[in-house]
Image (tube, rainbow, N blue to C red; front, side, top):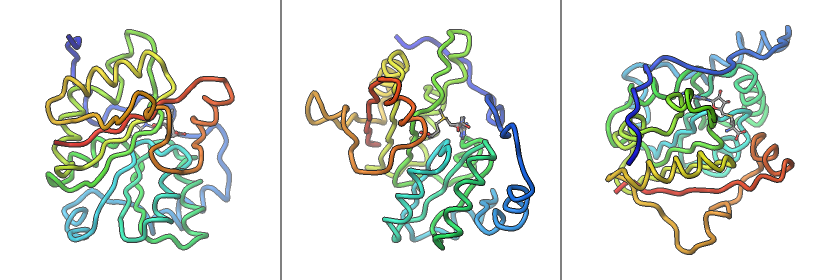
Length: 226
Ligand SMILES: C[S@@+](CC[C@H](N)C(=O)[O-])C[C@H]1O[C@@H](n2cnc3c(N)ncnc32)[C@H](O)[C@@H]1O
């Protein structure tokens, strides 16, 4: 039985949003370059993407994964969401330098982006190393919850993928329990070892590196929308 959770208010965000130090260069990036890639939540969001495969990364951190995906999948559009400004600056710098045109970035809560989307519009949702909020009193802040899975399911196409990586032992069970109890998702797991391996190659993210250097073993969970 999954414990009953109160839904998180959609715009409530926990955790750090600003880096401790900023600088003139970063301010200029935010003011002059970020607007070129900035996603605005309006009807145009989906209409402008109508015939493209769209994939969403929730909490991209410093953007290692979304950058790699966008660079290697030019036929797809990627939406990256991150409340933390240092991460936004880091990704904006990279995509501007490499002239990547298939990423749009939203600075805020991914749930707000999902709420602004039409049903069945996404081919994939990626959530790499979501904050585990280990204290019991903070479990209600976890991104993976029945409430949010319902929202993910609504915007994923049939056959769309939900990819979650985590190195936190208790959160692994929480995630699996929530997903296995959700009637809209199927766990794609071909043998007893495949969750130990990345399903496709991409550079280590900051939190993946952190886990590995602290001898924590990440697991990679792949689900499909039924
Ligand atoms: C532990 S970090 C992992 C960052 C990155 N994915 C990695 O693997 O290095 C979790 C990230 O999720 C972001 N985050 C938390 N809640 C979010 C939400 N509701 N929408 C978008 N991003 C969120 C945080 O700001 C943070 O950068």
